[in-house]
Amino acid sequence: MTYLPTPCRVRDLPGCTMFTLPPEIDLSNATAVFDAVATAVHARGDRLAMLVLDLTGTRFMDSQGARLVDDVRRLLGPRVPLRVAASPSGVPRRVLELTGVRRDVPVYDDASQARSA
Image 1 (cartoon, rainbow, N blue to C red):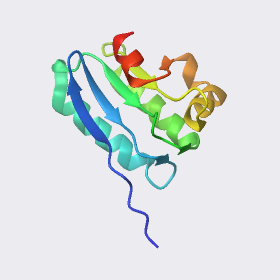
Image 2 (image 1 turned 90 degrees about the vertical axis):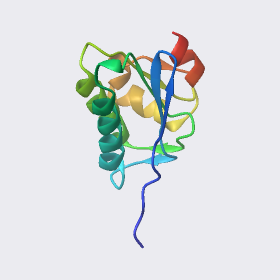
Image 3 (image 1 turned 45 degrees about the horizontal axis):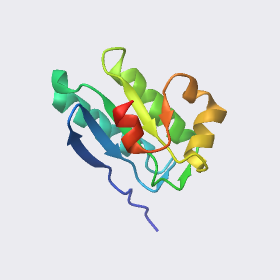
Image 4 (image 1 turned 45 degrees about the vertical axis):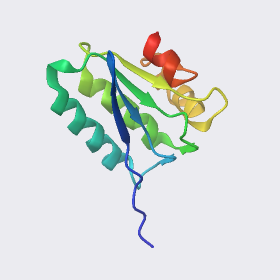
């Protein structure tokens, strides 16, 4: 069986662009998700003020998801802030803590907190 990755949902909100990431992020779709984020970042150019990755609906994420977040951080550089929303009791938040990505990227309990922080 071939796994087709769930696409990201992209929304332009006042002051930020938000990506709602798929329910699962692993080796099978992490590259496709990163490519979608990178394409949107490049399309927005200088208009991109802040990027929020919404992982609140992501039930499973392995180290490939942590790498995805870190790669997006590197893609943005210091000019554009990156924030992550992840459920306090969810797997993505724990993976970000265990891999150390949370030291470099602020993680909030929900998307509205991430946008307004």
